[in-house]
Length: 271
Length: 261
Image 1 (spheres, rainbow over the protein chains, first blue to last red):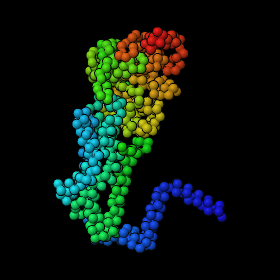
Image 2: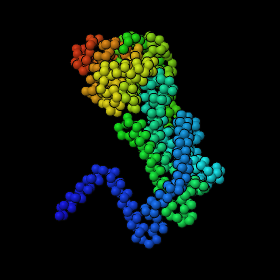
Image 3: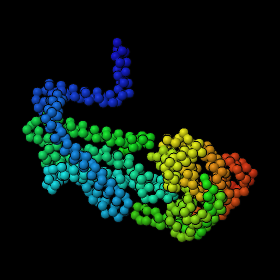
Image 4: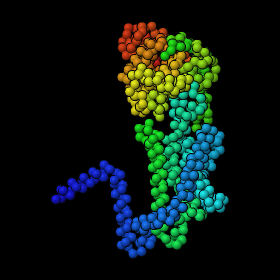
C-alpha cells in the first residue's frame, strides 16, 4: 500500500517534470482555489483582497457594459505607443553613440543619469506638462523604455562580427547592402531582447501616468475603484494588466522564434 | 570559375595599424615597405611569426585596410574581384548556405534567378547539395569552410586572398578541405595569396613561400617550391625534397633565428 502511494507520487512527479506547462497551469489553479477559499473562510478577506469569483463577475459586467474596452484601449495605446517610440528613440540614440565617439562621450553622463533616475517620479511632471491625455503616458513610457533599447543597440553594434563586415566589403557591398545583410540582422536579437523587457517597462510608464492623472485607462480604473473602496474593481484591473503584459510578451516571443530560426536556441538575455 | 586570372604587384607597401586603447589611439607600423609580385595563376604563401603583420598585409591588399604608403596593382585592372577567405568561415549566420552564396553572386551583379541556379550548382560542386537550405549553425566546421570557398568562387574572383583559411579546422577536416581546395585550383588555375603560420601547409600548397620578419613585417626571403603538381594536402609532406624545403623555411623564420642566438 505504501509502496503504491510512493510509486503514484513518482509518476505524478515524472508527469509534471515532463510537462512544465501543465505544472504551471496546476499552480495557477491552486493559487486561485486558495485565494477563493481564503476569501470565503476569513471574515473581511473578500472586501480587502476580493476573490476569483468576484473578479470573474466583474470582468463579465465590464465586458458587457463596455467599461473593459473603454479602459483597456487607452492603456494599450499608451503601452504600444510608448514601446514603439521608445524603440525608435533608443535605436537612434544607440546608433549615434555607437558610431560617434564624440556623441558617446557627450551623451554618456546624461544617459547614465536618466537610467539611474526613478522615472516614475517624472509622472506628475509629465502630466502637468503634457496634460491628462494619452501623450503624457506615452512619453513617460518612452522615458523608461528607451534606455534599455539604447544600451542594447550600442552593445549590438559593438558586437557585430567584424569578419562579416570585411567579407561583404571584400565583395564591394555598398552601405545599404551592408546595413541590410549584416548590421540589421546582427541587431535583431538585441532589439528583440530589449522589446521583451520593454513591454513591462512601457506598461509601467502608462499605468503610473494614469495613476497620476487620467480620465480613463486601467491605472485610472484602479485609482477610481480604490477611491470608493471597490477592491474587486482594482484587482480586476491588475489582472487585466497582467494578461496584457503576457499576451504582448508571447507575441514578441512568436516573432522571435520566426526571426531567429537560424539560431541554435532562440533566446537572448538583455543586460 | 572563369579563367580571368589576375597577377598582383605589391610595391613598397606600408600599413599602419590604428588601435584604440582605453585612453589613447596608438598608431603602430604593422607592415613596412613590402614588395613582391605574383604571376597570374601562381600560388604564393606568406608565412611569418604571429604578429608579423601578414594578415594585415593581406587585408591591405584586399582593400580592407588603407595603405600608409606604396601601392597594390592587379593585372586585370582597378575593378579586380578579390575572393577573400577568412580564418573564420565569415558566413552570414542568418542566411542559409544557398543564400550566402546567392548574396555573393548578387553582389557580383547576377540576377536573382541566375544567382539561385548558380548557387545550387556551386553547392553541388563542393558536395553540399543537401545542405542548401541549412543555416551555417547547422553545418560542421568543414562544411562551413566549403560553403565559404563556394561563396568565394561564386564571386568569380580574379585572385584568391586567403587568411589562415584552414587553421581553424581540425587536422582531418583540414586535410579533406585542403585537398578539395587543391582540386578546385587544379581546374581553375587561380591566382592565390595564402597567409598561414603553418610552414608545412605553406610548402604543400604554394609555388613560392615568402617569409616575413617579426613585426613590423618585412619580407625576409622567398623560397621557391619546385614540388610537382598535382599535390596532395597530406601525402605531399612525404614527397622527396619536402623536408629540405620545410627546413629552409624554418631556418628563414626569425623566431628560430632568435632561439638559435
